[in-house]
Length: 488
Image (tube, rainbow, N blue to C red; front, side, top):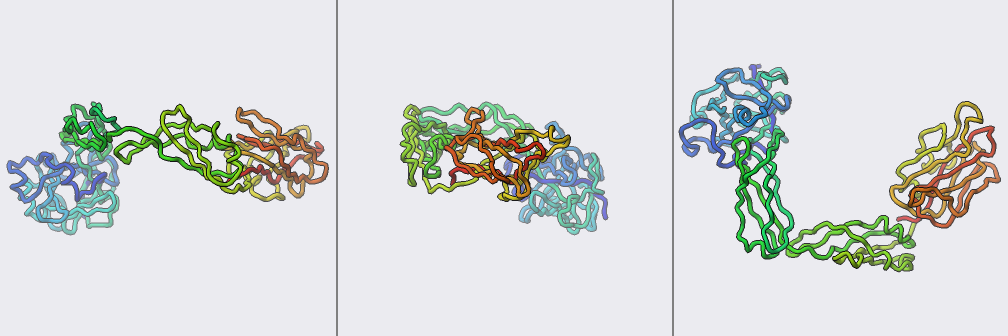
């Protein structure tokens, strides 16, 4: 192996497109001739970060070898000193001449490997096979090849000053892979909605981002504004501006504004079931709508209040469609189309329960209490210390993700148990308090509890079973808990 040092790492943009990123960026190679006179194209200033030693960049310079990796500088002057100019070789595919800020050209020392620094111009380097590096890409990484050699981080060293040398090409292992970061800022497109009549107020500061991590505020933006009449009519207005980045780069900021008037809302829709309560629809109906904008496909999100008082409760009892309109004082028109399908009774503890809670118990995992097995033991109140240490009454509660309608409930002891004497089903109301369902306390007159009961429908934010024992000689146990209501 020929000793080398430094691993690079490329982010953001593929190396093959580097010359397109910052056209017109001044060369730091120090040649007296222009790029047009050279056998190379316009250079791109980049940092070459190691894929293995994140935050370390390969530094060409100081007139000394070996080549080393360094922590990427925090200050603009330091970054420019570490940056490498990549000159695309004219007429060659993915081939580059690499130059330091001082104009030193990185080359192979000999065809078999090793590194050298040449004091020649980039155009002369383009004619020297030992000074031309071919770049291959894989995902966000690149490798720098020259003949049978590739740039390689020596010894997988992640320390500052780790040596970079050459080695036989591999398969993009971290020590031979790099990420290339253009020293060129990018900025998000600005824009928004503008009412016809006047140009928008443009931001005084825009944030530039750089591939190796930092951001920088851009001020003194030179905008190339469109003619005033562009803001008088509906449509899209696009223009751009430029600002000086901290690294000597010029950052382009694109702007795209929609000129138009906000109108009524696009129709909303939802599906529910015949027999649904208005209170249920209040809870699950959309709270925002998309309002149209004249002259464009753009929409604006707006809060909405639906006029539930105008809904005929009888229309909710049968299958079909029901239209609900926005409150009259909202200021714009909006319609909610509700498709009512045939209802299906579902166990709301399976579809809507998000948490459960116990009063006092010996077991802590209630997953088996809603697994559909009405015979197997899922919960019991056993505690050490004798009968006096057992909770009576006890309860198990479930809390819903949203209010749900409950019409009946069921509770079962396991097949080997018989000590539940009284059951009271309770629902958690909209204020957070617990109330008995209409059937009240239910007494188990027989042996093993297998209780199913219907009651006046309730709108519940939670549901629980309060259980009392027949005898303090043993503990209570449950196998399954169900709370049924209409659903889809």
